[in-house]
Length: 65
Image 1 (cartoon, rainbow, N blue to C red):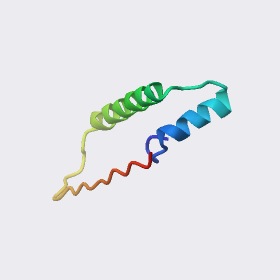
Image 2 (tube, one colour):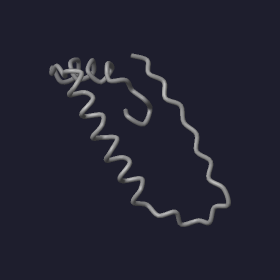
Image 3 (cartoon, rainbow, N blue to C red):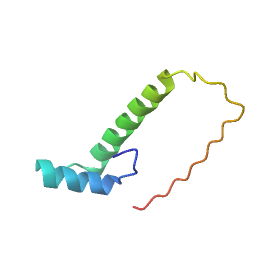
Image 4 (spheres, helix red, strand yellow):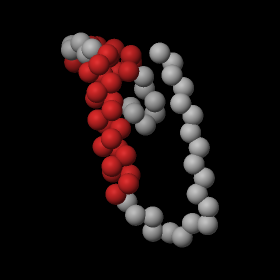
């Protein structure tokens, strides 16, 4: 869900609907942060095996809360 940009509000709704648990906004943020750190760690463990002449990186952060 992190990769496709599911909001904290939607995660809280899914937790309540699917598992019957109510997450606080802080707990939802903590879980999201931990997952993002794990994902970042996993991505950074893979070496770049090809030769690249250019690497372009772009990103946009949209807060829909």
